[in-house]
Length: 510
Image (cartoon, rainbow, N blue to C red; front, top):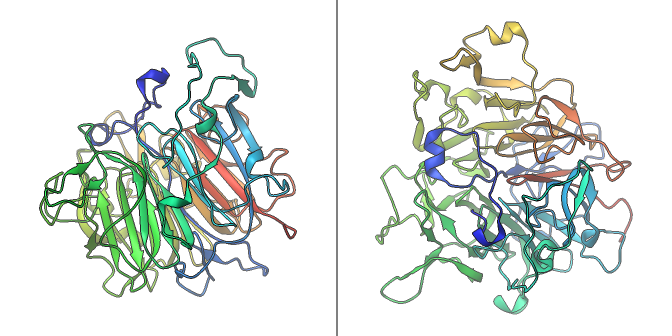
């Protein structure tokens, strides 16, 4: 998503490959796998809403389940466009700050049970069945009216070096969480999950229906969300409020890439729609924005996991499905081996794409409980509680400080044309951060959460999105500390384009 020119703000310039620069003008960070802190020593590892123990493969959320418990949500990183939901004043936060409007201890605040970070916006679901949104609404991603007659902040103005810079001219209707009107949905509709991409947003109901709003943006800058109901099938460029996504039913989980979405139904079927320029939809045939039955804007079944999928995940331009035995299938962009198929990497460093779902050979023999993807790297959690990382490493996004011996191993590390380490070819254990429970990959950063509820961060962090109180990039995972997280047992993390969030359950009844 590209911020409106009237705001005087441009998104972060991505240090990504040429083919992705053409694939998207803006790169969002976000996908995540989920877990809940266990009562026993051996943690449960799960997806966003339900859990699976170390002896089991992950179980997706049942359509009748309500996410729980109530969460204390903290944000850090850029708030220049209201991404953190901290209101119209804060513009940058380098350590976790409690989002006051989502404070579980405040009776007047929204009480959140599930949320997701998009490129420059976020969504949340409350315990009383409200859908909240905040951040940039230029392409309808917030699903509500946010017009405001206030001023425009000059982002080129001199700023101090304080941990949090202050301004007073952000749009208050975008920079604070607010409810999407319930009138867009049938009476008594209950929601179980929200998911956010760059400029697209979705929600799943307890009956397995999917509603969406916003838009998908292709590499040419064209915007398309879906079709009108008339026979001419006129393209809807931007959908400003929620509408039913046709062709989907019995959906149990949904995930967003930058400009595509994937859904998992109760039979283990995987569906995908959106932009397909990097084959992130898993369709072998070439497809653009045409109007035939194979059009990418229409949800279509993905031929992955013959035994049926139990869990899905996505990077900006690649997708994953995990089957009933913990075997990973992947498709889409693989230019740095991020899809888990190192043998398909071009020797000359050229583009590499998996045109349809394939078994992730790099994970052969591993039983995967959760997985997530950044722009060029991926992280998996095994049923043994290991964090495994692979893909691009030169921004520190893998969280591993490789030894000289590892750098000299050509079976592990591939160097670029200048001899600099660039790619970790096979899944590598992240040491010394504990038993794995949850992971979220940003564009070029990663947040790891262990079973003790401690979060660690690594990678590219010039906007403070690592939450470490500094803006330098780090190549070794470091614990996130601060007043807001003290005494909390974290269970969730989310990563946006230039911001991040973490959350911990309320430890006492609301």
